[in-house]
Image 1 (cartoon, rainbow over the protein chains, first blue to last red):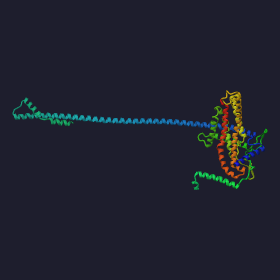
Image 2 (cartoon, chains in turn red, green):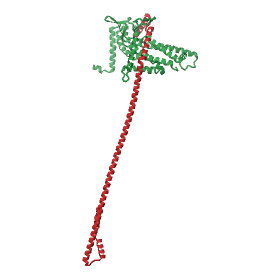
Image 3 (cartoon, chains in turn blue, yellow):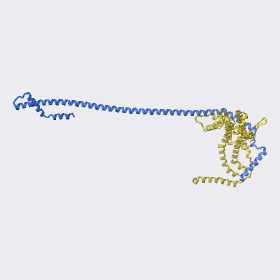
Image 4 (cartoon, chains in turn brown, green):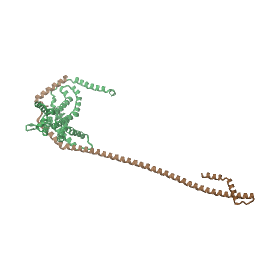
Length: 197
Length: 309
């Protein structure tokens, strides 16, 4: 505290001393210095206004423009990229759809081919079977006819041998019919049915 | 070393402070008090001795320390600004350019643009920006030690050279005062041009006094008129006193107080504070005072021309 008091007294004393020395120069403005200041400040201002501020302003504006353009360009590019991406996605989707379509169509075609082949085969087989059956039936009928004829001849022969007389037309017919009705052709017919299956 | 590392931060700080005070006390005991020093006059650090006598029509235009500093400030402002302006890079600015750009942007958009109409801002921007940069550079070179102290000369091989010293042109009342006068006349002229003489004077009255009796109105007008003149003092003295006080503080803390009082131990105590104040002055006060001067100029100009005061 005492120290601070000392400093205060000292400064006061020196200020007074300065006062005695011819005015407190610290706070008295000097006209000469003021004129110097005015000249130098106005010169500085003129030079700055002419050679410093306009280029700085231009450069700042240029940079601001460049930044704005960059932002716009990047936005544009992003938009383009988005569009491109969307287009590719669309194309991919279409390609997938087409692929699916192709697969489905080929599957259908193959199924149809298989079905056609199957049905063709079946028809041919049935045709063959039918032809075979017809052949068999024809053959069977012919065999039956032949058997029947032989049975009739044998019957007539046997009867003539037994009775020692020649049979007339009516007797012959009755005898043949009787003999035939006794002969069982069902086995033949049954064989024929089994074969058909 | 390991013991020091093992200590807590609090203990380290306490140890540091103890050493700091201990050295002071030891030095106080050893060197003692040499008594007051009357030979050393701190205010003479700011005294202006004429170096080159110039006298024009009875006006003393002698070149002295303040004029040299003004010249340095002017040259530094012009060279820096023009140099930066000429090599402005639009894509990759360096740090100096960035700093200047920040200053430019501050003066253009914040100080000027924020306080007056766009048309007025365009007209007054060079003036306000020049004020800002001129005062800023002037303050800043005040913290560079330059060989300008002719009060205390150094003898180098028989040559009497001035010793290094800190000085600031703005620590001189004349310089802020003349800048203030320019500002003061400028804003009055702008006000009168915008509104006409009597309307401008009437605009000094704060709004809301329309129904007041004329005598009271006159009284308030006188107060407002005084406040206009007080601006002359407040604007100039604010800058001058801040810079002067800062330099006095640096002078005293940097050893001036110890020399003045003749107590060497005091130097140990004050010297670290000098660093603290130096950083404060360079980092804050120098820029802040330039900013305040410029923004007050803009506010005065804007206020003088504003429609409703």
